[in-house]
Each structure stands twice: as C-alpha cells, then as structure tokens.
Image: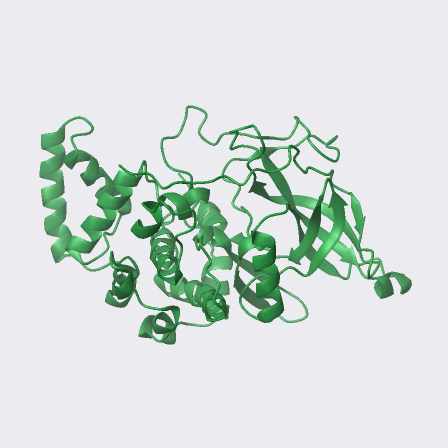
Amino acid sequence: MAARRCVPRFMPEFTYHPRLGSVFIERNTGTKYVLLEIIGINYVQLLHTQNHNTFDLIYKACYYTYDWIDNDSFLPSGYATVKFIRPGKEVPRSMEAGNSIPNSNIINVEKWVIQKFQGAFCVALPYMSEGSLRYILSIRFNNGLPEDCIAIALKQALLGLFDLHDLGLIHKCFSAGNIYVNFKQTPISKVEIKLGFAATIYDSELESPISVSHQTELGTDPTITILPKYPGGHPNLELRELYKWAAAPEVFYSQCDDACTVHSDIWLVGVAALELAYGNLRISNREEFEAMIKKIKRSRRLPDKLEDLLEEINVEEGKGKGKMKKAVVYFNDKLKYVKGKRKFSKEFEELVLDCLSSKESKRPSVGDLLQRPFFQYAKNLQWFQRRVLYAKNPMPYC
C-alpha cells in the first residue's frame, strides 16, 4: 500500500511542564494568570527523537485583571485555558482566523503572549469546561451520543467550519477531539460548542492518564509521564491521530506535503459523525478502516454496532478462530439487520454517506450540509445540556 508522505515539524528539545500554582503576568494589561489544574496534553515531535509520548501540558487557569485587583476582590475575573505555543505554520493560521472571524464558533486565542519560554510562548484560550466531545464520549457515552445531540453538536462545529472555508482556510484535522463544550452556570446558564482550529487545538480527552509529581518545575521533568491505558499493549490506531489515518483517500495517498482541501475537510466531517454515533472508532489499520467504509456504502445504511461490522470484516479476511461458526452467526444477524428497526435516521445515514463519497466533487459543501433537514430542525443547546451534560446514567468506556 502506498503511504502518505509526512514531513515532521521538529520542535526545540524541551517540553513545557510548569508547576501548578505558577503565576504569569501579561505585560500589556497586567492581567495575572494562576495555573490551577492540568486539563489536557499537546503532543510534540522533538528534534532527534521519535518519541510520540513527548508532550506539553494544557492548564486551566484563573485570571485577575488589573482593575479587578484594584477592587481587592478575592474572586477571579474569570477562567482561561493556558497552552504553550511553539513557532510553526499554525500560528499565522490562527492569527488570520482570529482577526477575520473574531465572534464565531471557532476557538480563537484571547491573549497571545502571557509568558515567554525558550523562544516560544504561552497563550490564553477560552476555557471550555466540559472538554472535547471525544472526552465526553470516553467518560459518559461509550455507545455514542443520542442522534438528536449529534445534530446539535455537529451543527455548531459546522458553523465554525463554514466561517473558515468562507475565509479560504482549511481545517485539516476536523474531529470529535477538536470540538469543545463549555457550560456557564452564571449569571445565566449557557452551553457553548466551538471548533478548535490550528494553534487552539489540544487533546482534552486524556485517554492515557497522567502521573504528575507535586515537585514539577518549569521545563522538562521526567516525573511527568503518561500511564498506558492498556498495559499489555493496544492494537488500535490512536484517536488523536484520526485525521491522519482516516484522512480522505486523495490526502492519505497523496505524495504532496499538504493535499488538504475543503473536500477533505468534509470527508473528516463524515468520520467525526461516525465517532459521535458509536462512541469510538476502534480501528487496527487503514485497510480495516477502508473495508468498513466500503461495507457501509454497499449496504447504504449504518450498522447498529460498529464492532459487529469490524468483526465481520476480520472473519472475511480469515482472522480469528471458528470462522465457519461466526459466518453462520453473521448470516443470522444480517437477517435481523434487514428486518429490524433502524437505529439511525435515514437523514443521518445519508449525511454520513455523502460526506464519505470517494469522489471529491460529490461531497457537499458546509453550506449544503447546514441546509439539510438534519441540521435545520436540530434542537437547541439547552436540549444538549439536558441530554448530555445532565445525563443521569453515564456510560464509561468498557
């Protein structure tokens, strides 16, 4: 199989792990930022190493503006996400988006330089209290979100993507891991769902727990490690790199350094819809992913359980034991599948199939997607709050 050519962007040889409680003062305004807790990770590729577990930490911080401090208030002015930014192509892309579409469903940088370190700097992003949709799936909805809530969340993300495409920008890595949720309780209860872009993207799901020493100091610290979720090894592809291994065919097999287009963004919308529908995409390799997409297209509908479809693919490829017995089981299951009630609506299935069209020209634009009844008649954010954030029986990963 031809592989997509990747040119890694190497970073300076250090990681950024300031200790909790560190105070940063933004020079222009005098605003103070206090690091409260670790809420995510930003993986980096350092010079002369292939260690994919090298990372910077993402923090929740409270901040105090200069006038707020003068009023002797003990309560913070608000909260922010503090991320360490390294020089690269994503910085000007984020700056362009922030300057051109400041009030949209895109997460933009609020303060660009609140702390400098080793030629790079910390930025303040809006604090998204509930993390990413992928994180929400991992702790509450193992089997996927309710379809009406998928419509709500995807619509909000697509509104942000529409602004990017209208500006001539390509997202390149649209996924459930880059769509973030914030719930404000005061002064009025309010839910926000926004799309991370370029420099404002980070991994909030923490699928592999972090072990952090209380003596963590500024810079590299070997006491900060990622603990493997599957100590015995895990054959599935990393969800955080889904935009690479599940990329559109014209991107995955391209020999160009950057083959992404608005059409390849739409393909990733379809993949994100699948992840939201099933709670996870436990894929072993690109071949298995392509076989899954082909089967879905051939049947023109989505299976009730993605694991059953993947197991069927493994049986057909000759993997596993008891192949004949499994084949009989699947034949019986297919009879039920044809006669049974659909788990997903026809509108949602058509949405996914159209986004995953092999021909770029046949994929709809973001504007076309937003005009579909699936999104036109989507419920409001308060419904998402009630059905997802206030869910009484969360379903964690098995």
